[in-house]
Image (cartoon, rainbow over the protein chains, first blue to last red):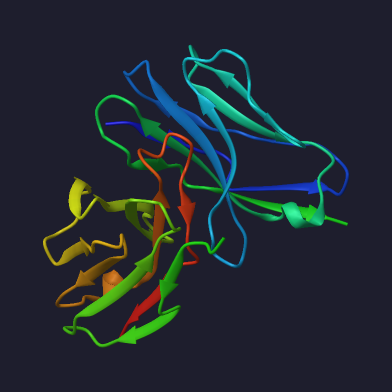
Length: 116
Length: 113
């Protein structure tokens, strides 16, 4: 079974600065998808960014980018020019393309605080 | 367009009772998944329905069940509630297989007393 680990329970960043959230995963599969989701106090999980494992190019969405290292099974999220609205719980998630169907396996989450 | 709608937002039930939660997916989305979120266990997959058929199931006891209707709306049911069932239950929908991500609702907060 696949596992996802987020080793940073909490992180903080100053407004306008850059922060990187870490995520590692364990899988024997070669084809899969990785996601970062954001969960603000409203509780709704919001998709931040998506990465396809067979694409070497790192995904980018505006101020959000990832560093995808397939061999190291690492998938970190970089938030540039942090804004107060970025404060939330961030979850890394894995979706198999081979064995476990369309379920998402989530990490434990990282609580991000943005200081003004 | 409307997002994923979950009702009710909050629910308080007594141990031993049963509960039904509802999820209306985004129009056109045929896949609906359910997740349980607790402080201790994090986010755990319950099950997924696609075109009224259960396509995938997580490791939860048989007290947890679900169904999907022809309009893609889904319900999940928990019978004989236990204190440990207190959690945020999230529903997510996608058009097909979720490779482009899922759209989540705001969840139902269930408290069992």
